[in-house]
Image (cartoon, rainbow, N blue to C red; front, side):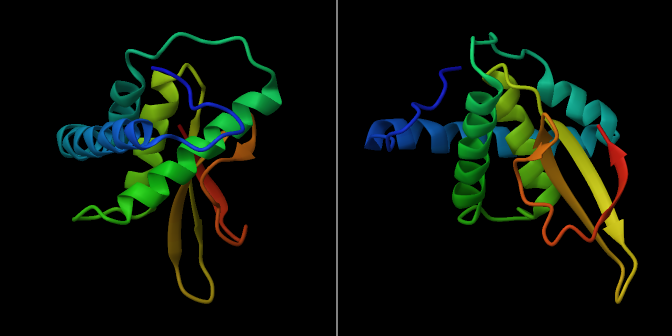
Length: 141
């Protein structure tokens, strides 16, 4: 899959292609979560990873963040559950298609009320927000 062009806005056609890719990844993530445990769903979403491109670590993090932002913006308009876990799975799928490694992190906090959250990291850098950072890591996939 083609990487997002650094340093410039996407043209209308490129935005439409990216939105279509996000919708397709969302539908696939929903299907995978219904069919298998989370570990298998993540493995299937990563399958068929794209070709790795020569890029510096900073360039890859910037690209991963652009992908994550596009996922968040696009999924606001989709029906159904588009909260953190689904956003994270869609982001993992898009990163894998671009040859960029991503790690799903699921965390929780117990106070004042119990709350769980999922986010994506690349090379230890959060791609999708870990919110306020008060979540203890439960699992990384």
